[in-house]
Amino acid sequence: MIYAGNLLNSQNKSAYDYLGDALLKQDRSREAVDTYRQGIALIPKSAFKFAWKHSYLGNALIRQGKIEQKIALYRKNLEWLPTLVDFLTYNRLGDALMKQDRIEEAIAAYNKSIEFYPLEVTAYNSLGKALLQQNKLGGAIAAFRKALTIDPNFAEVQQNLDRAEELLFY
Image 1 (spheres, rainbow, N blue to C red):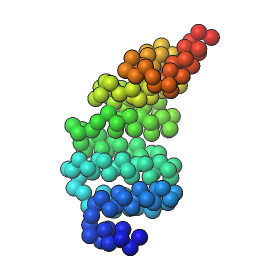
Image 2 (cartoon, rainbow, N blue to C red; image 1 turned 90 degrees about the vertical axis):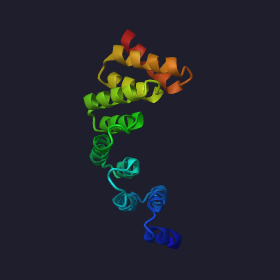
Image 3 (cartoon, rainbow, N blue to C red; image 1 turned 180 degrees about the vertical axis):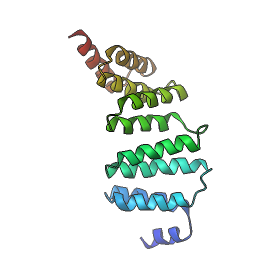
């Protein structure tokens, strides 16, 4: 820990990431959140890494059950860096919204994810699960089928498709 302390004292931004990761692995999420926040404070808001560091912080917050704060972080990323945000940010936002049962907002986030990268299987799978939860079976089946055209070996998607079709026909 002395080594990590020396790195932190030197204003090494990456050291905060490593220490935060180590704290998370030890289930010390409160300390990890504080560590990630210290590292974020060293980065100019205009930097691309600022958005990425918020993802680390979001993962620590989710372990504390602070889903609403995680949602706010992803929305900040989308606001600060709209041209640099990728499909993963929208997908993670959708996942966090699903945990809050904010399904319509999650569906919108998954659709944005697909808009950024239309070949991402997990976005279609997540969209399908959200639609399935709303009992929109046709949309769910279409999303799962699209995912399988991209990756026919994705077992989870096939299971989700089978479940949706079973619900449709029974």
